[in-house]
Length: 238
Image 1 (cartoon, rainbow, N blue to C red):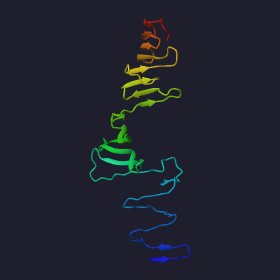
Image 2: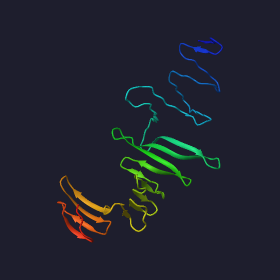
Image 3: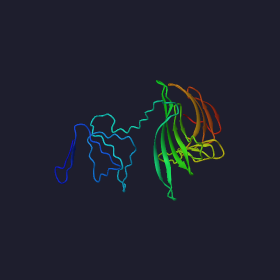
């Protein structure tokens, strides 16, 4: 083993096996270039004083496979159902200078049985001072607003801000319209006679439909697309 200063700016440390550095702290002022792997048995903090990338994962591989890869690996000697296996936390400060976890992504084992494993992923955000589960990807369903908070679900199209909306406070579903406290489901359209409730039973050659139209008319079409019943205004061709 030896320590060699080959010039005024280069210090080389060489060994046939390994080099042990024992100190309460080791300060590196400048860029550290490591050509091998880094293994640490304790946590690490990377800090910057500007808005630059704090952690940059870079892959120079040129094939079509995925890369770079960020792996969160929970290695447990006794894995079990309901184990939480990792989280990504988004912390900030409130106006009192207190640390607040504003959002979190959590992964969990639902079933650890070999061959029938099930996993879950949860997206949580803080709402009115309390962390709430907003999206839950479970083994049998995908749930929005599983915490039953007064939060609407809204889908916006290119021309309609309320293409689909579930109003939490009113327990109302609206299609192409905003909330309505009178009925549980409302369908609206800007196209003449194109707004309707349609109940259909169809195959590749025919369909049976019962239609309630926006102009107050109701039509029933049989499997041959023949209007067999009309209630209201004149019949509409299909």
